[in-house]
Length: 53
Image (cartoon, rainbow, N blue to C red; front, top):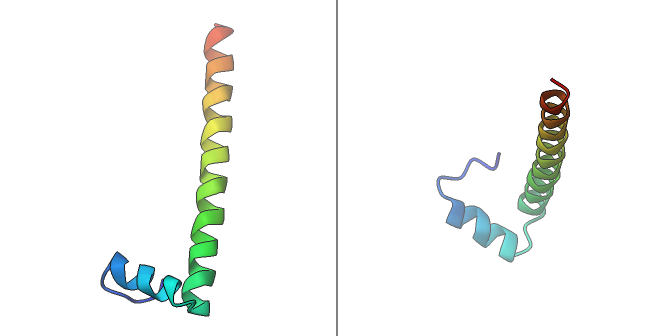
């Protein structure tokens, strides 16, 4: 997203308060949270379906 070669570079940009890096980190966190919710919903639906069989 930031065109950097290492996670350390991104981490340092965030620590320095780089707006672009902080916005990218915010998007990553939001997408991670959504992925977790989707996975949990899919997993609970599969458990419900499997218990009904």
